[in-house]
Length: 196
Image (cartoon, rainbow, N blue to C red):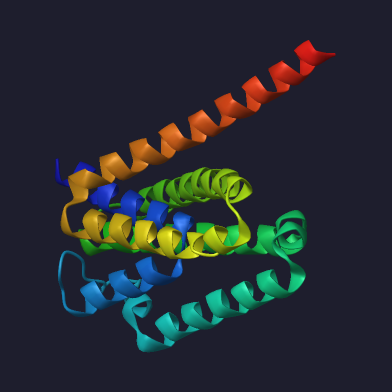
């Protein structure tokens, strides 16, 4: 049962990073430094809670946001910047999940694989949801969406670290959002085929 809880913790953290990386990485680093629910000391992943690593994540996310704003949301979504950002999210999710498993003495590779998959789920589901919501809002209201995204990511990471079984809710919610988004896309295209 410990293995399941530890996997859930790692998967929940990684999914939160997929939603939005900055606050989850900083929160997990702070919790690990205080040995609250997670601790990377004595593992191969000690660097995750180091100030240098955390500062590096802040810089990368800030630069990505600047590039996204300058290029425009549509240009960023269609360009190589999005692919690079997605790869960075998968790597961060895999690292955090692998560190969570290493903390408890479980196989690291299992945590890395589960973390990469959970980060991908968080990225795809949240991106789909927020893109659909942004399309329906006016420009001023859409400007507040990043705050909601950060808050959702922070809550998912905190709950996953402090109460690992709640990561099931996070993962199930993301899977539901992803399947709902794909279902709506299919319905939209089916409607267009009928119009022809």
